[in-house]
Amino acid sequence: MGDVLVVIKGLGRGGAEQLLVSAAPYLDQERYRYQFAYLLPWKDSLVPELTGAGFPVHCLDGAHGAGWVGRLRALLRRQRIQLVHAHSPVAASGARLVAGRGTRVVYTEHNLWSRYHRATFAANLATFPRNDHVFAVSDMVAASIRYPRPLRLLPMPAVETLHHGVDPAVVVGEPDGLRGELGIPEDAPVIGTVANFKAAKDHATLLRATAHVRRAVPGVRLLLVGQGPLEAATRHLAAELGLEETVVFAGFRSDAWRLAATFDVFTLSSTFEGLPIALLEAMALGRPAVVTRVGGVPEVVTDGAQGLLVPPRDPAALAEGLRCLLGDPQLRARMGTAARARALDFDIRKAVRRVEQVYAGLLA
View 1 (tube, helix red, strand yellow):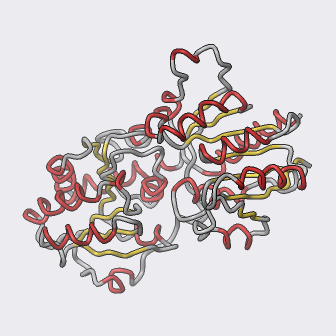
View 2: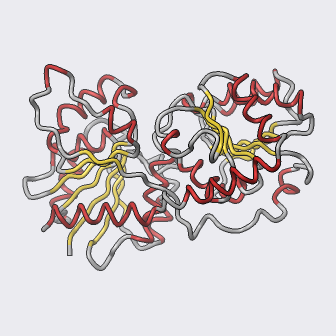
View 3: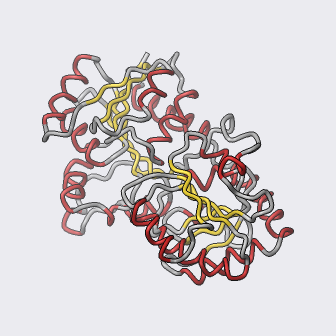
């Protein structure tokens, strides 16, 4: 039986972190002993879900300098870890430094290299050849993994695009009673998104687009599911735009997929996405999407098939796409059916099987 440690920067609510939890029920625990470790003690909201499923979880306490690297080294030795699978560049850089020669290293890249802070980029780059295998969450992310010209002679590990996805056992059911709970009239058209309030999600563009949509569809509601550092600023902008009666802030919800089932149209106004799990969940529920043409999104949605793709930072274009779908129930239904079919290609179980195939090859 192989001993595997999955390490990530934090276990708060986020796309990469949620993937670990979604994958957990399908891990082959007869073949591998899995443990999890994370750096930031305040990002721990997903820890109970992993420990509740029977997985040991270790906090390396990376809040006070680089001491976590030594704690990681000690953990690897104490638990006789044979393979480390890292899911963030900082955690990966430390793991590569302390993993012994007999410990294999797998890395999943969730972001474009060009988006990293200079120090993070340097640490990731300097240790990158130590990877035994690299997964990228989208083709766009994979294409960004390139050494600068002066370092092109460094060995490049195998890089493979692996589309992660949703747990079909979770994304089921109907949103009975949720509209009433949220104060949304039963006959109101609902645009919705599931995204934490961070700069890359660009909620400002979505609010401005909604102001345009409301002129054509006065009863429309915008349902925002999530939390984050820019929530107060987003609420302030909504008030400035006169959208207090239009925008519903639902906060963090562990049943975000149920709220997504209340949407008529799912939307993302992001300026960057690796592979947005919230989009895949909405598609699995049969919801058409109006989303920005960024990152891995075009690998999921074909413009005019499962939804509409629009340029980022363009409220008018986003509004036009939303108006188009809200005004055409037949088009929504057709795209929703296509979206549900497309989501089947992004089953988390397929990703888990492929990851464990790589583990088996490395540990053979």
